[in-house]
Amino acid sequence: MAEAFYPPRHLYYNGQIQMASGSIFRSINPSTAQPLADIHAATKSDVDAAIDSAQNTFPSWSKTPPVARARILLKAVQILRERNDEIARIETQDTGKPFSETSTVDVVTGADVLEFFANLVAGGGLHGETIQLREDAWVYSKKEPLGVCAGIGAWNYPLQIALWKSAPCLAAGNTMVYKPSEFTPLHGLMLAQVYTEAGVPPGVFNIVNGGGDIGAYLTTHPTIAKVSFTGQVSTGQKVASSAAGGMKYVTMELGGKSPVIILPDADINNAVDGAMMANFFSTGQVCTNGTRVFVPSHMKSQFEQTLLDKMKHIRPGDPIDPNTNFGPLVSEVHHKKVMEYIRHGIEKDGAKLLCGGMEKPKSIGGFEDGYWIKPTVFTNCKDSMKIIQEEIFGPVLTILTYESVEEAIQRANATPLGLAAGVFTKDLNMAHKVVARLEAGITWVNTWGESPAEMSVGGWKQSGVGVENGKRGLEAWVRNKSTLIDMSGVVPTVFSKI
Image (cartoon, rainbow, N blue to C red; front, side, top):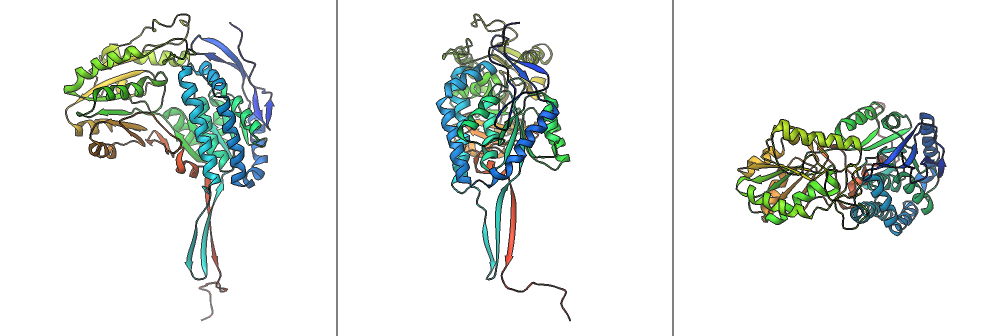
């Protein structure tokens, strides 16, 4: 086995690297299948130590004025932006995503969210309400931090997700113990060191590495006040159930099987561009993927031909090459999973393979050992097919035809998931009507995938609980305290002498 490229990764708490006492696993570069670093997993006692670190510093951090916390977090934003390309290269090696993507999206949008929440709390975002009930009685409310929170990250947007969770958590005055995905763990230490360099006190942000057992221990730990999890539905259900047993606050950002509805009047080029972004960006490893593309029957042939023409512009290759816009899948186990779905679509579902399939791309010279896959399109699909019903989490676009908009809406909603949905049309009045009926927490019109810091996002149905980002995203990290003050000088009572 080739030598690991980076030094071993341990834990981070009390503001410094701490030696882990658990087993060792390896981070693998998906584009080459070669190791990147040895990762030392935490034990339960290591997690206890990290949580103690967070608990010990919570009283002082929570009492730090919001504007002072904001200044520190904005310094972290500055550091992230200054080191954008350096961090993006490591993200590319860890995830396999093209540098053209990680350098313009992952680090940038993560820093945007940190900046947004820092400015929000500095500008009064944690202010409560004051209400005069009557001349001599007032009510006031306060937004108070929860305590020590756990963040459990996903492997597809490692740094961005870590910032989406830690930014509002820290801005609100909480402390955090964060567990990166074991498939893409390199960002954890980087982010912790950025926070420390910016002036975040020791113990406010801590990193523990490990697998599902460490995540489960975090979830059930009695000191943890909240669990924020991003990942697949089945795991999220277990995490939410465990957290509920301890009456913990939760935010769950889970999977989807999102519909893209192409209305009959849509510009075909825009519609195809949107469908491609909804399926092939990040090699299809995006929770909001719009994998069910509903196309009017009379537009099917034109849509398919335009799609085939534009797919020539998908460029797999060296992920560091700025011209590459399509990378490998994240791991060997995930590659096998996605390939099995493609095989099932061909052999069992009987869908028509329009392009892609079981072979690796031909233009990846020198990277043949990586977890590569061709962008794949199935057509002549039916709602009953497995590739239509289950989340694949790979670059697999499925085309379904419809006869009426009413039919498309009903079929789009016929899923237990409800993360995202989108509509392409020239008629904005119709767009509003259709979007209003789509059962999803995130909807787009004539675009796909953009998720700015100002936009609160979260799933419906089994796709999640709560929201991240936007003003509502801060509310997920505080608890309300209301106080009524009576200044009349007399205590109302029913126990007076008759």
